[in-house]
Amino acid sequence: MTITHLVTHSGGFHADELLSSVILTHLFPQATLLRSRDPAWTNPAPGRIVYDVGRLYDVDQKIFDHHQKQSPLRPDGHPYSSFGLIWHHFGRDYLRALAVPEADVDSIHEGFDRSFVLPVDLMDNGALEPSVAGPLAALTLPVLLETLKPTFDDRSDAADDAAFAQALTVARTFVEATVRGKAARHRAEAVVLKAIEAAGNSPILELPSGMPFRAAIDKAHADHLLFIIHPRDGDWALSTIRKGADTFESRADLPKAWAGLTDGPLESACGVEGAKFCHNARFIAVAHTREAILAMAEKAVAAVTPPS
Picture 1 (tube, rainbow, N blue to C red):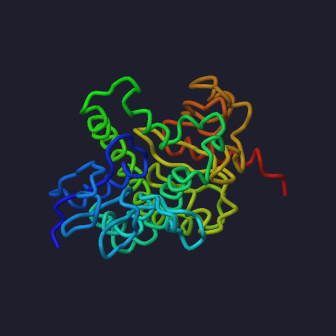
Picture 2 (tube, rainbow, N blue to C red; picture 1 turned 120 degrees about the horizontal axis):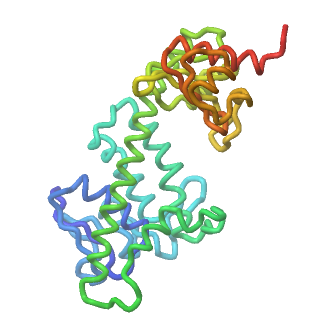
């Protein structure tokens, strides 16, 4: 069946139908996106996908609302928003349309659902307070998208639809960038796992370029690794490894004597010719050559390794 119309409600908007629209407009670019509360449009009909309106969740009739009394729930009991429903039924096809390798589709679909879709579902249903984000509450994606609504005293006929179109562009950028990032991390994982195998018992891991490495290190249970080195824009970088994805604390910091130094003073402090820079927070350092950065890495290891 050809989809000719994508129908959601008119008036003010929230993140869930905006993000649903990102998925559906990409999959059905020929369809007209219509915002209405007219039952003639919000009821199911051939060639139509209706979402976040209609008081019904029926896959066969292609209507995906969550505001009805018996609202749809995830298997774990958490409530769906329209975004969760659309992602559940159309997310894999969306990933394929973005050229995600088939072998990675299920994993990325699940990861995106857990980290991106579920928080939107919970906030939209009032099951998660924005305040849990603390000082960053006003910077969560659902809140930021809603700042694109018209102001209360802009009541021109086209204000809501124009704001929705603007917000849709912004929402699309975030969704596509997040998917690209997750797909890239899958590609990086294979590279990092191979490098971990090559490194053996060394506490220093050399990578062919800067890339996400946290997931692969966890997957390999490579607890012995302390530092990462890799080429970077004509020089070489030395990075620490965080203890976890939710902390800035590193397994080992770079030496305190290097903090904030550059060029000659850093060469003197670390005893390595070609040392170029060390961040004041001691989580990254840079040198001109691989030999220099490797020497700095070895000195950093020695500084945190008890003598045998």
